[in-house]
Length: 429
Image (cartoon, rainbow, N blue to C red; front, side, top):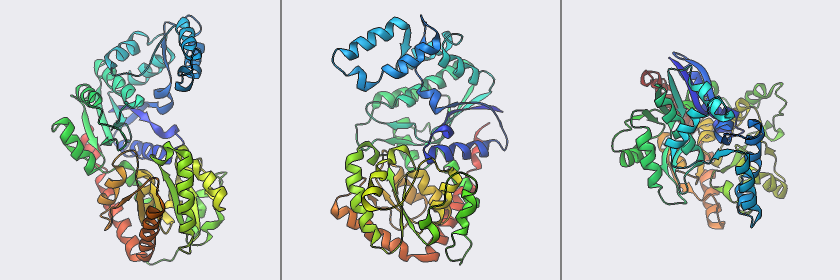
């Protein structure tokens, strides 16, 4: 079939977004042809129409000035909204996806965003939504989820099949369940095939969607396991990292000359950068005591607080813009990985690296240890206090003591999960 990938996150700086988008395309391309994609930048672009000025000027004005920080400002906010309204119509994400789908269709010749979306859907037989992070039913609703549902509705009206793959379906740990969004997703996706990526998502889906979601296939990123699988019995050697950095413009961190461990952030800690910097500074200082070099790794722009942690602790920081294969090689060859990130946790597991998980914006860091059959699936605080820091350090020490036997077991399980990923090809038909 000819496919269009919706929520193609390969243009994002986030490691997981990039990696799983690439992996999903690789898997499906074995039998299908991708003819277009709708990436994260297009999803987040303003939907403008009936412009009284050149459409691109209108879209850029809405992008620049209809921001929460500006709109909330006394007097200035209301003036900005009035001024933008004088330039033409614009649509903000809402639960009225039927009207948004109407606009995407009626404005397909004049609206920059509608034109691009229509052009991406028109030549395909089906759209494939990369559901990796969309369906978290937080309050308020995630704007990209609402926009993606509007695109699914438009595709259905245009006679295209809809596949929602590689998906998470989760409650949010820091807000009430958004039942309005659950109801909306159930209506829009009633005729779609939904495939989730982890058993907890399947369990939540059974509760929320009354049996409509029946398929679970491990995250497409597991299909990269063969690239980083360790060779049994070999000691750590930095040469397994060097080639991935060759001529990339990124240098391999000198601390990786010897066995090292990695500390990264989480999608929950990213929401409070000042607090996260303080908590992670304590954690990083204590992890130093385990006797291995500690590398701070930004796997998302939300981890930028680690730069401040690096300044305070004199630890090296690997930036988010490193080539994705080099980043994966770093995690796959670390001796332990402390983080609240799902896809980086998969990258670590591919090489046998044990993880100590921290909280996130969903159930994902509880699901991954279960899938990897970890003997300890404890989810530690994303903002660890002194007691939690000691618990994380103790858990990391225990992982380090597991040695090569533990690494072999983790990598073997990741390879097993990789063997299940090709089932996606049987489900897209």
